[in-house]
Image 1 (cartoon, rainbow, N blue to C red):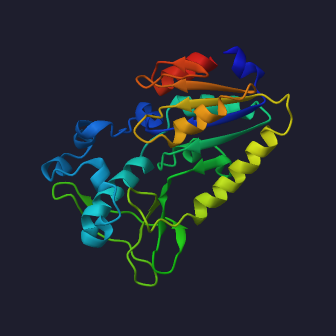
Image 2: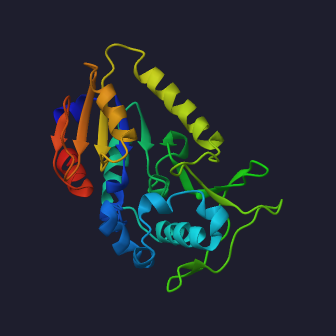
Amino acid sequence: MLKELKEADYVIITAGAGMGVDSGLPDFRGNEGFWRAYPPLKKLNIDFVSMANPMWFRENPKLAWAFYGHRLNLYKNTTPHEGFRLLLEYAKSKKDYFVFTSNVDGQFQKAGFDEDKIYEVHGSIHYTQCNDCGIIKEIDFDIEVDMGKFKAKNLPYCECGNLLRPNILMFWDMDFLSDRINKQKEKFDNFLKIAKAYKNNKIVIIEIGAGVAILTIRDFGDKMSYSDRVTLIRINPRDYQVKNGISIPMGGLEGIKRILE
């Protein structure tokens, strides 16, 4: 185990889409990677950025829920890889920990991480929102998808009659309801306040699979790493460059094993 990990008092686990690759999840890297996961969208010439747009819930809700319904079913049926267990065991050995992730897949909760110690900055596919009455609630339904036609066979509606959509921050999204993640952020900010309270506390950030297309996760680690009390460990097979920290040019599971075992 790295010396910096042994000496740390507090742990922050930050993760992007690359965290789920070893569980068999797609990371949607580039159009070709996205279209390999969703061949029907290649025929329609719709890329990930275009598909992850809330307009589809207004203009073509069956297409929108085919995409998000398929992802929901995929995440429900996915088992988190061994790296999640290793991280959780390590995190529990310290004074406290928190997870900060841009992933919407709920894999950290599924792996046993405390729900109150997770900040899902882009929301969660396991929750829906109603833009009419403002309700956010955990999904209690299944979406059937016709993969040939790439259409949802059923659509979810709120009790008020309005079409539901995932409580996920999409591109050009003016309708995202942030109440749930705001509560998560408040808990995360309190954690950071406590972790930084004493000058002798040492903090380690383990960043896994955070790319450079959307910099939310990487920017957090880069800014924190300028403190003498913070060590940033960046695990990434391609975008592994780091100015202040330790670079691990590996995939998620391999890199986690390398630093913890």
